[in-house]
Amino acid sequence: MTNLFTPLKLRAVELRNRILCSPMCQYSSVEGAPTNWHLVHLGSRAAGGASLVMVEASAVEPRGRISPEDSGIWNNTHVEAFAPIVKFIESQGAVPGIQLAHAGRKASTLKPWEGQGPLTDKRKWTVVGPSPIPFSSGYPVPEQLSVEGIAAIRTAFVEAAKRSVRAGFKTIEIHSAHGYLLHSFLSPLSNQRTDEYGGSFENRIRFLLETTESFRGAIPDDMPLLVRISCTDWADNGWDIDQSVELCKKLKSLDVDLIDCSSGGAVPYQKIPVTPGYQVPFAERIRKAVGIATGAVGLITEAHQANEIIESGKADVVLMARQL
Image (tube, rainbow, N blue to C red; front, side, top):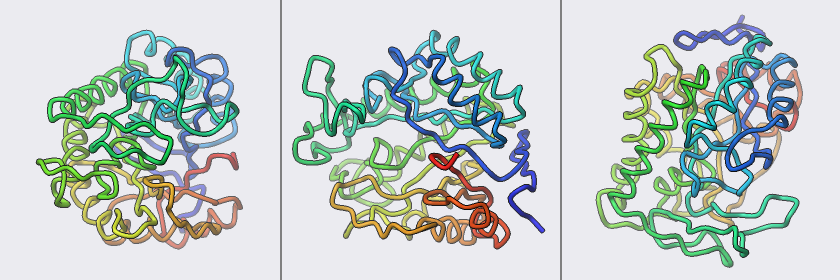
């Protein structure tokens, strides 16, 4: 019987168990570069037994950071800074992974211990999005990306993927969840464009699909590719699980290997029924409807709970963060 300690092979990568360390923002980078803090934080998770240790959401360009202290991989200095961390993770028997991201209209914010909301001092920068709709009151109105601007960010994602390969990472996850840039294109609550990147379902998913397709051509054929999505916005007239299923069918056709099933983050008025394992049903539905590997995440805090998710076939892996 498959359980929490059954290895899992994804292309050339073999995970020693089904427990993955989810990306966790550390707010400890310097101009995007990881520090010794990251070596200890990520290295400890690898030494602790997680099969895959995923670096926090790492921006593909400077304005894609959530806060000024977030990590990034938009230049070769970042490659050099990540390389020894990657080697240590591998030395502990874990697979090193990185989540590539762009914060979009939720960028340029304070780190948590400074307060809540956007930066208002000289550190702030112009944020971008699919439409000029701020995330919440008090947040800046994002600059609407032109078609050329979309293409430039897609290129930034691809170049970041190439740098990730050079740094030694063995898997990459595209962050298309939690209201950040790629998710904000998916959701009709934040995307009110009238061009080929807005309106219909096919148009709203175009940016993510184009980025994913470009990724596959930029990384080795034997490298697993993961995508994190918000399976629902938890808000009326927003992105939902039915759309997520259809999206994942298309992602599978583009050779994505695993869907990391999270939710929420698109709007501040979301209504989330937070209970243990509240997002697991999304992973189960996508796994069964699409025939793709899925990861379950969110309030998975007990060993027996995590094991039951795997044993019962609700997901292929569990991703844990604060619990680790």
